[in-house]
Length: 294
Image (cartoon, rainbow, N blue to C red; front, side, top):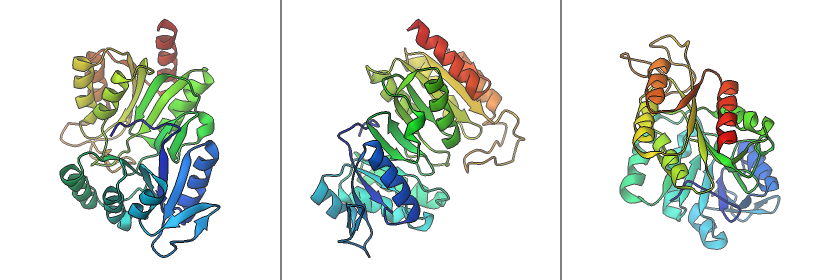
C-alpha cells in the first residue's frame, strides 16, 4: 500500500479503550480523521464517545470499511495486535507503541512480508503519519502542521518530526505528508520507501529527511537519493556528539564498529547532493531557501 493517507482514510484504533489510545483517538477524530472503530475483545459492543468497539479488526473492517489500523496496545501484545490487523484486512498498520521486543518486531515484520505482502507496516515506536488538514494517525499534534505542501517530511526521530513541522509552519511553508518511521532496529517502513513515494508524488516538490546515529539506513537513503531522486532533499542528522558504543534514546541509535556515526551519514548525504542542516532550525532555513527557488 502507498504510505499516503487522506480525508477518505478510515482508521480503527487498537487500544482505543485504553487511556493513551482514547486520548489520541479522540484528538485525531476532532482533527477530522475518520476514526471509525476501536477494538477490545472484552468490550465489544460498547463505544468510546460514539466510536463503536469490536472484538477484533476483522469485525471492525467488515462493519466500517476501515483500511488502516493504529496500534496503541502495550508492548507485550503488539505482535498479536499486528497480526490481528493484517488478518483483519487493513492495508496499513501504524504501531505507535515503544518498547516492543526486537525479537517480536523481527518476527511479525517477516510474517507480514511473507504472508501479507500488500500490507504496509509503519513503526513500531513511531509518532505516526499526518497529511495536514486531512488525516492524522498517531500522536502528532495537528496544530503544528500547515497544510498545502510543497514539502514532504520523513523522520526517524519523533520529537524532531514535530520540530520539523513547526519550523516549516513558522516560515509559512506547508507540508504534503509527514511520516515518522520510528527509531527501532526493525522499522516496517524505511527512508527509501518514503523517499520513493515523495519522488513519485506530484504534490511534493521537496523533502526533509531527519536521521540519527545508528545503523546504515541514512547511508542507504543517500545512495537512493543519488541514483533515483530529482527533487531537492534537505537533511538533519541527530547525534553528532554521541559517544561511540553508547545507546542514545532509540533502540536503533547506537554507534558500533565505526559505523552509524552522524558524520559518516552527513558525508554520504552531502555526496548525494543533499543540503545538510547542523540543527533542526538550520534545516528549516535551508528548506525555506529551496522552496523560494521552486
